[in-house]
Image (tube, rainbow, N blue to C red; front, side, top):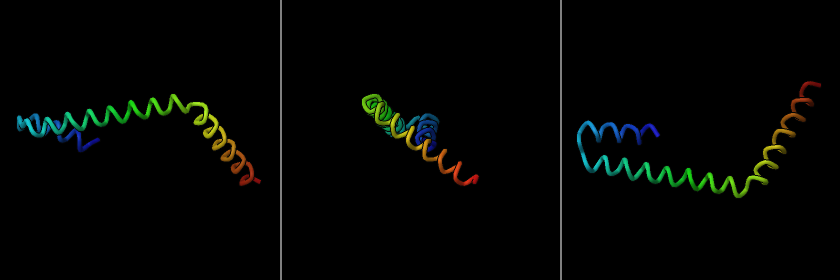
Length: 68
């Protein structure tokens, strides 16, 4: 993310169409990945909730065992 931000700033300072085009392309790709992750999370929300609950139940159980 820092690299993409640097690319945009440097491209704007240099007024380089190539760098700004690359920056825009990176932003579009990142946005598409975020949208895809959101859709995947929405579709699989029940499984994700189950997995998170199982993880925290195991972590709590391990913490109780370690305290004894």
